[in-house]
Amino acid sequence: MQNVFLKEDCDQFITRINELKTDSLPLWGKMSVDQMLAHCNVTYEMVYDNIHSKPNAFMKLLLKLLAKNKVVNETPYQRSLSTAPQFIIKGNRDFGLEKSRLISYVQKTQELGEKEFDGKESLSFGKLSSKEWNNMFAKHLDHHLSQFGV
Image 1 (cartoon, rainbow, N blue to C red):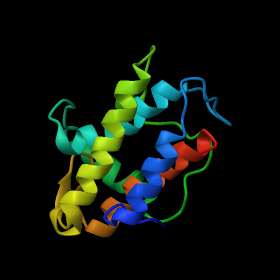
Image 2 (image 1 turned 30 degrees about the vertical axis):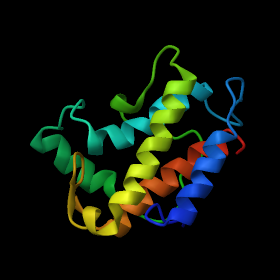
Image 3 (image 1 turned 90 degrees about the horizontal axis):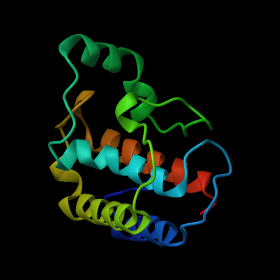
Image 4 (image 1 turned 90 degrees about the vertical axis):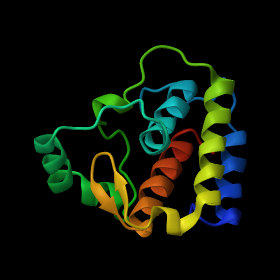
């Protein structure tokens, strides 16, 4: 598992993001490349931007019981998994804008570092360790960059 808190690993993610083109096609799934970038940005928006509503207590409990371990463990995601409603991107997005936003989020996460994330509250899963944050960020990015062959 790559480490989103290490500059070298973040540079590798950024290199892969920069290999994407407006006409890149997925090897699986239904998202276009601009939708995929916007989809990846949602994970970071939930950390840095106050634009997504918090799940209610019951939904948060369900997410912790049913989804948390699959999201924060080191096991790679399977292809064509379903996703939570707030991660579904409809319509076209601005490829350049979404790409630059994703690169900025990756850099910001690395610069803030492990200590910033250790015990940090997740919108959906409660407090996570820095290792769980890393696993969530890294495997999600790797999954979708691999989806587009980069």
